Length: 514
Image (cartoon, rainbow, N blue to C red; front, side, top):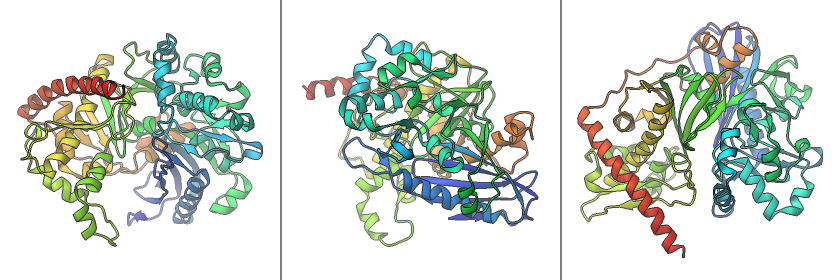
């Protein structure tokens, strides 16, 4: 899949490569030009066992190479000054001799380490681990995943020479160098944010040696393409590969949300709210993460595992008749039809509430064991009610994260990105639940655009990451969505009930679990 703007080709191009949960997106941006070209190659998220959410590293790599090759070809005679990397965070791969993967890629959504995380949260060291690393104690973190391998796969662990993340896998494949960068490292639970190096206490808990982890380089570091990769994708070996950052921090840069008081919201399969700060922020309340963009700029925020996935799930469960009618069509999903049904349902869904914990939830509760639930079901509720309740459940989760960010710095506005915002319903519900003006940014490429901007800063082509962003093409921002005061009040009242319901469901789960 690709898209082109019909404009004159630029003299110079920078490619932002965003390797996400379900696709690799290579976006070529003209420098000082309105030209851009995006190539997307998708790959599956596999579920071999309950709670296991994995991918084949080689399949992901093939998608990366294919998207890069096509993006480089699209640049034509323009000089590609750099490839800059963005990736989903919190992944883990075990490598054996020769760099061969011995494990699949365990993604952020993999919750097999739920029991480990639960035990660790009860440990007196948990709060200190969060404070030092900036990463909450949760099953998504590589720290918990490593502890799981140590307990459940000791023979495999003995064969692993290196433990790496998704970004590190891509860096090694493109450049031949095994390394990581500060941003993705800061999301592992293994890093000391003060020293910017691996934390001995966390390594001891994880059961890994310092030498088994890649060196941590600045996000603006650049390496060269390996000879074989350069030939494969059609670029000179001198083309720089800027290591870049995690997709979350780069999403803030790509949306221009890099000043205190302006929150970046990304909503795809999962979702997050993040605010830029000038250095690591210690979250004494335990509800926020803190990850690096550069040495000087960090983002503090919270992520939800359940975002736009809730509507897709509703389609699979409540709209099989519509799916059957669409069988064989290029886009067999029925999201738009479901959203149309939900639009006619009033705020609050006539008493129906959803706790949208389909995947192991992260912020603000950091309780991966809490299951999803519909509460207040009545005979009069239609599938439109169930869909809208799911959307409202996501929005209310994100509003609690906003409260925590408000305590760091008063939040004035929200800049959002994500495919779900093509729907007016998502925009209105989020703006109402957050009680802030919500602007959907024109940078559809999101994290890829942020990666390209960071590259220009790292290469000395711009004085700051935001100055790098100003040199690149971005689409038109939407007019801010401003909620009615009546809707704001309704969601504020609803949220107070949802918090109590979440606590009640947690108690019920404990009882049924025995």
